[in-house]
Length: 122
Image (cartoon, rainbow, N blue to C red; front, side, top):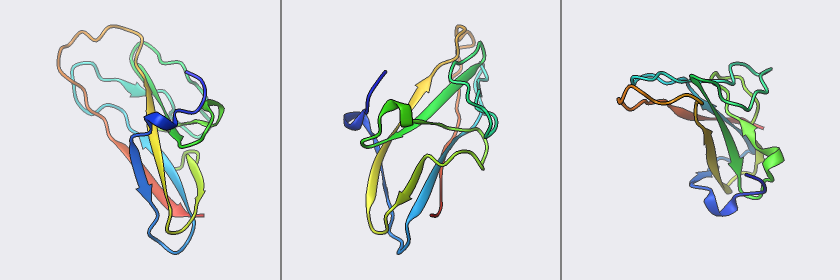
């Protein structure tokens, strides 16, 4: 996919504080299911964007961003900031792009993982 997906942003974050904030989106490894998939972005140095046989990749995007600015969601805290300097008392919409593992899902039991948005002062 290319270009901004403004019409597909599904979540809204509102900064109700009095200071600008940074947002970091983290997508954990699967915690259940018969086909346990892991997030390929395992550290802040990881730049892989192609899923493997048992691994997925996720990116976050925010309203108005071009696809070249989408940020990989790391599977640990301390990853790259997904959106920088969200002004106080404003909001932004964002979405997630999930790239599935490359092998077939064979187990038949749905998997589950958690996506967390961390907020820090800018």
